[in-house]
Image 1 (tube, rainbow, N blue to C red):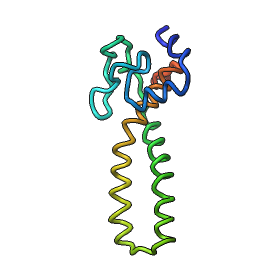
Image 2: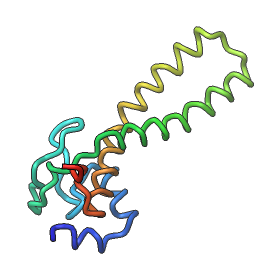
Image 3: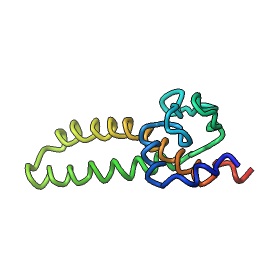
Length: 126
């Protein structure tokens, strides 16, 4: 079973490797061939990764995390300075989009690592 070694690794090891976008098995090779595209196999250890489908989980994690960063900042700014709506939109919308773009690949790496550790592929319904 290709996941036997992964089950021996800790949850935090999987998260750390995922945040670095590294292979969940060896932690050395890149798990991604592009922004969100997975490699078929790790170049270092040969672990198959291309069959794992995280689908909606990474965007969910990203929205959850970015929301918990941006919303308190918006509330704080509104209560402290009473900015105009235009200033809020000019600041928070681009900040939110940039954070989403930066965090999404890391959350996909985390989802990949956790799914690999649990032996899931995302194709169980087939």
